[in-house]
Amino acid sequence: MELLSNTVALSRMQFALTAIFHMLWPVLTTGMGIYLVIVEGLWLKTRNADYYYHARFWSKFYVLNFGIGVATGIPMEFQFGTNWAPFSEAVGNFFGSVIGFEASWAFMLEAAFLGIMLFGWERVNPIVHLLSTILVAVGANLSTLWILTANSWMQTPAGGEMVDGKFIVHDYFQAILNPFMVNSVLHMFFATLETSLFVIGGISAWYILKNRQSAFFSKSLKIVLAAAIAVAPLQIYIGHLSGEQVYHYQPSKLAAMEAQWQTTPAGQPADWSLIALPNDKAERNDWEITVPNALGYILEFKKNLSEPVRGLSEWKPEDRPHLVGLIYYAFRTMIAIGFFFAGLMLLSTVQWLRGKLSPENISQQRWLMLGWIFAAPLGYIAVESGWIVRCVGRQPWTLYNQIRTVDAASHLPASNVLVSLISFATVYTMLFIAALYFGSRIIRRGPNLELPLPELEITKPAVDTKPGRFVPDERPVEAEQ
Image (tube, rainbow, N blue to C red; front, side):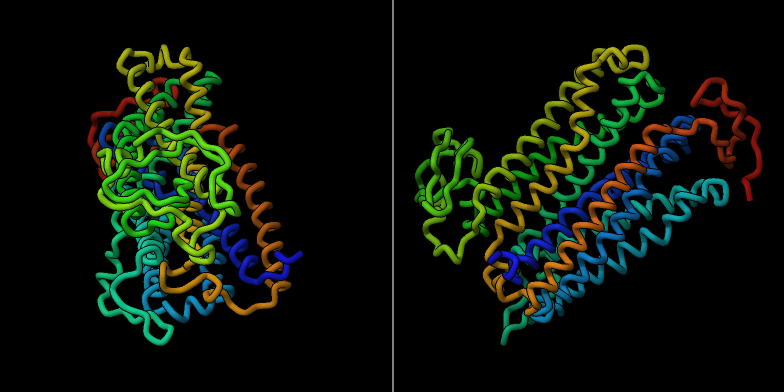
């Protein structure tokens, strides 16, 4: 009952709900936009109809995620003015500008060309259509840029100072290029791309396992596998760089991520906690399994640390993160999924080189296909886990070391926040059920390989010679007007 009367706690719960739910949808659109550019480019280059049908099929998932992402993103941003008005007033001259850039630069660009991408196949020049698809993908990924810029600035505020309770910006470029910005943007970019790749790969593997158009979906699986060869290792490396930054800029968060209660001085080795049961009240771990001297190698690739790793007990309880167990295991969940993706990519690449992913053999790779299906939702879990570490680990600060969360919340009746929280939970549950229904419906129906092929400028499409393929007629024709 005490929780139900705590406005700050209820506001935090509401923002957590809206942020976690909203994050499910743009994760796929930002990565899938790049995939759509690839398959449409291959369609124009090779004239292979399979790539055209892939573009038409996967764009259905794009528009489904885009619609729900818009519907859930706007209420989340509105909360800065309703539930977090003191924070908005204090940092609005920078934070508000960056959020405005996301709406005007990213969302408007994506929305403006989405209609052409979806409905312009036989209405505009093929190059214009490809350009529209590129601009949609650029708009989706610009959202990642500006949202992560804003959040990174909350983690490592730069470019100004607090004066009489308000952040005064002296250098906008320094504020934008704050210490966390570059790695945070890259880490999230590759997270959305990796998630999208394994979702597309997982759905493709399901069709292959069901012997439904195996040759057709083997193409999409190979495309995402080729991309994952680069993306999966890069994501692990950039994640490591992000961890190093936490070590240098947010020592209390690192202590929570590692459930480390006592300080390890500089120049000494530190054990790495593999698994533990943190106890916030007792300020210790009830039990744990550690790897001796491993933390130095993880943070700095050497045994002895150049800087101390401060323990949580160095901070007063009101000045350090709580929910240490949540932060600790969310961090390890994210890491485990990243390495699982890399392992699945490596195994799949070996099978590809052995010729086991050819249209004739791919249906026989049952366990490998099951691995891809299992991987499909894991990217979402990794992204949500990463945001839990990022935001819960920042507490008790909204603007790190500048504005406390308790001071950032609006002074609203707890009952009002509770009503809006319940309302959001109800509506979002309905949206989630609807998304699962329509998404499963798209999968059950599969791609429509009977769609007429749009006329291209250079060659005139001939009649299909076999399902999902066509042979171009070499007679030149005029561009469709």
